[in-house]
Image (cartoon, rainbow, N blue to C red; front, side):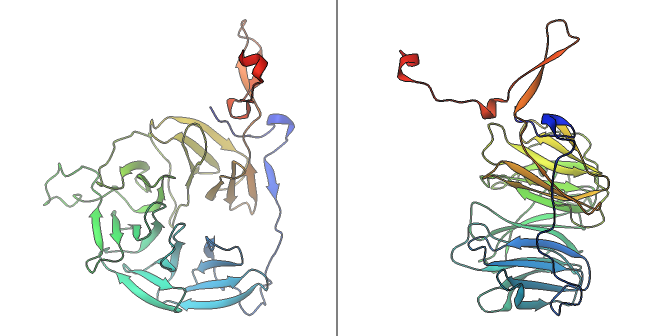
Length: 330
């Protein structure tokens, strides 16, 4: 099982700390005026990245000059945005704001090209499918999660129902994904499932094609965030994990069994987001303690000794050498 370094493991007093490499001064003409909620690289080119803020703007930045290449202005506070990791036929940025409408901004034209209507309250999370170019998931404070095909005039494909249609449509909670605000979304790496978190302290796993609630039980997933909660899933591991900010820690669950296997401790204040880097098998977390921590898989795992009073260590299976010589095979 893939383990991640916590404090004092593998000779480290704490998880690896990433210090700020580049900053923009507050008197810079392009700096955001209020809290920055989302930052994302352009998926196909590191020469550009985007940021959105409570100052009601989405900004497109030139990485080389650290100047804005374009600015999208909105009437409402911006909570989140996301660009498709796989789309090649469009350059749409989905934006969630304090209003109930999801706005799609076209980087090619520099204008808002689509508006998706269906939510009743603010949109707290948006996520494009990593499998299909035009499929978008949105989550709102109205307790609902919607899947959209942005090519369709009607737009909405499915409104997720935690009861899988077994509750009368006349009941207020029918066609709701959670019994509270839904403030986090994340597709699995293959795009076949969607994970959601809500202020009802629950996380749910959905079939992204049928919209069925798979009923995986993760137990209580503490979530008192008043805005979007950014969590992530692993990629390239023998088991698939989901990493969820949990107070000042990060809870690690196996996606399909719901088992909580670890709590990563290293931050001193509330963790707001985490991102998994598949190329290096590293997890990055950001907290209100003003630190970004890098978590790496532990090389050795503790194994209880026979007398149960001491522990030995064995090589983490993720790092075992699978190569063998022809003599050994014979």
